[in-house]
Each structure stands twice: as C-alpha cells, then as structure tokens.
Image 1 (cartoon, rainbow, N blue to C red):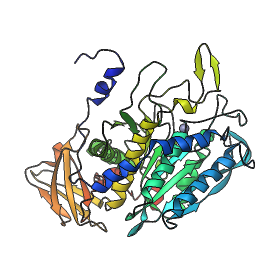
Image 2 (tube, rainbow, N blue to C red):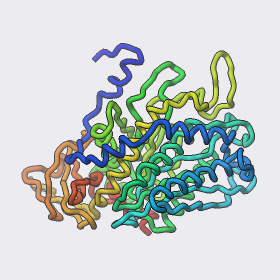
Image 3 (cartoon, protein in one colour):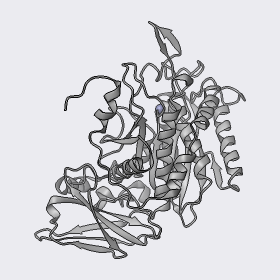
Image 4 (cartoon, protein in one colour):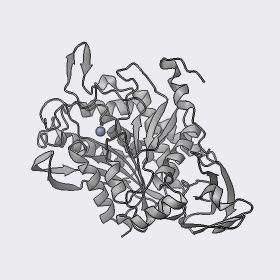
Length: 456
Ligand SMILES: [Zn+2]
C-alpha cells in the first residue's frame, strides 16, 4: 500500500498491525472508569507541578513554594485528600534513601511518595502505576534554573494522581499502588527504591505500568499522532539464568515475557474500552538506548512496562527554557495535549482495574506433547479463579488468536494441535468474567519466576 506523506496518514501507518485479542466479556465498570478520567484534572495537576519552578532531585527541599520538597509534599497532600473521599482507603508511604552517585556528587535524599489501596481478597498481589516527579534542564546537574517538566514527567505524575482519584472509588481484589518517584533523571533512583520497597514488603507485583512522557502529540518535524500510545516491554526476562536462556533459545519464549503479555492484554483493552485510541506494542524494554523507572523493577524480577507518547518532541525534553532560531525550547505546560493525556490515563486505569478484578495468571504452567499429535497444557490452580482459558497462536503472530475454555480443570488436551507449531498460554478467569493476562509456560513467561530476586 502506498501511503502519502502527511499528518492525516499517521493513524493509518501505525494502525496496520492491529489485531489484539478482544476481551470475551464486556464489563460496564471498566467503561465507567474510563469515562471518569478528566482532562481538566490532569491539567490542574500539571499546572501545580510546573508552579514549583524546578523539581530537580537536588533542588530545594525546604521552601514551601519552590523545589522538589514542596512538590512532593503537595503530591502527598493530594493523596490525603483523595483518601478522605474514600473513607481513608489509601495508606501513604514515603520511603527515603540517602544516595550518592555520578549524578549525585554530594549525598542527597531520594524520596518516593506511594499511596497504597489494599486489595479486598488478594492483598499481596500488587498492580503499580508509576511516574516520576523530578525534572531537569539541559545540564542534568543544574538544580536551580526553572525546569517545568510538564511532559517529562508531569504528565506521568498527573496520570498517577488521576488514576488514584478515579480508582479509589471502587474496591478491587488485588492491591493498587500509586507511585510518584524521584531521582529518575539522576539515575533511576526512585525506581530502585520502589523495587526495594516492593521486595521488602513481599509484594507479588503482577505489573508496574510506568508512565514517562505521555502528554505530547506533535514532533518538531511536524508529525502528529493523538490516537496511539507506545507501550514498551522486555522480550526476555532480565533475571534469566544461563540455563533458562539456553532452554528458551531452543524452545521459544523470546517474545513472551510476562511484561510482553501484559502489553498484549493492554492492547486488547484499548481496542475494546477506548474510542479511537490504541496501544502500539514495541518489542523493546525502552526507547533505543534510553531508560526509565520500569528498568529497576525488571531487574528485581517484577513484570513492568513503559508507556510513552507516540511522537516525542525533542525541543521540549531536557531543555533550558529559551527561544533560539525561532524555536521555543523547554518542557512547558502549553505543549501538553490534555485530551491525549486523558486517553493514556484511561488506558492505565482500565488496565489496572481489569487486572486487579481478575485472578492472578495461573502458576507453574507446563506443556507436553513432543512426538505426539496432541498438546497437553497443565497448571496449578490460582486463588479466586473460577475457570481458565487456554490460548494459542502461530509462532510468528504478535497476538493470541485462538482459545478454548477449560472450565475449572487444571489441564487441557488440545487434540490434533501439535506442540511444535504453536505458542501456548493460559489465563485465569473470575466468576464474574474478569480475565487475567495470558501467561506463557515455564520461567520465560512466568509472572513470578522462581529465579527472580523478588521470589527469593
Ligand atoms: Zn522522564
């Protein structure tokens, strides 16, 4: 197909590979959560954040009006206010660590602000949404100049607060965590602190949805896209041992980490619950040679993905606020597309609710059937699962295509479907039809891998 150049065609260009598996059951609650996300709430949050001048990790922590200390205290006060409206449903924690490093030459405190909404029946299982509050200008060590950070990452922080505002009105089986992180620009310190906190509190993190740079829709090259968000995921687990890697290389699994199956799940939700908005799966841990706070979570063995706008604008990111050569540089409030950010936030909130209302994906998944015409897939039961669904797809297909209900059994024989030719997976389904992401068999696809630091 020949595609003419121009803004109008961007949706078509990026829409070619869409065919995400659709949820089997339509849930009115998820539509209502999507409908409750408000662009003006997101705008109000970022307006507040920008007003702190700079939120650089090494900026003033004492002033009531300027610097990262004031900004963090304001976020905490917002969580307190949200919690007041849900009968105290949020527990607010501020883990802190004194850090020094290449970009923190003099020891400084890095503090995260976490709001924890405890699950009703499965509280150890945790779904996280995260964004980073710290901002920067051209010189990453400049802690005094104005660094508005409206998009990077005021947008992610606003998404976290808005998800908390809307989701705290409902009850979920699993625990939801709303995480506002610091120290990202100095070396992903807030993400490391979150991973450590999750490990220390024995959280079974099913997913961290990290939102970083999610509010821009036009690049400095003139290309616009307001109908997609990129979602990045690692292919093979960061915590894989050499033996696990050898087995995976032979039998497959390089595109089926838990993180990647979370993105497939998210892509299906976007197609079903959002209007004119899709998730673009990118088979990379992050943008090329760049990083974010999902990386330390992956290193700790937790499934994690990164949301980033479809089109970045590099004259706005990490720039001194200035005019040069007819170009306005700087990460300013006026460049954020709030209706677009609302769509990204809707997708996050729907995904968190969908996962937290569903049971965990099945544990200890096995497939057997070599030198046979049938494939047998088996799993251990999951708490809260009323039944299970077995999925399979061609080994080169991006999304799960075929499925069969397994009832409440813990194994299923797929007659005349040979193990050699397909990839297989299983999802858990609650009595009211909430379905988990699909899990791929073995350590390669496990949501809680036995070799992960998190499982030790
Ligand atoms: Zn960022």
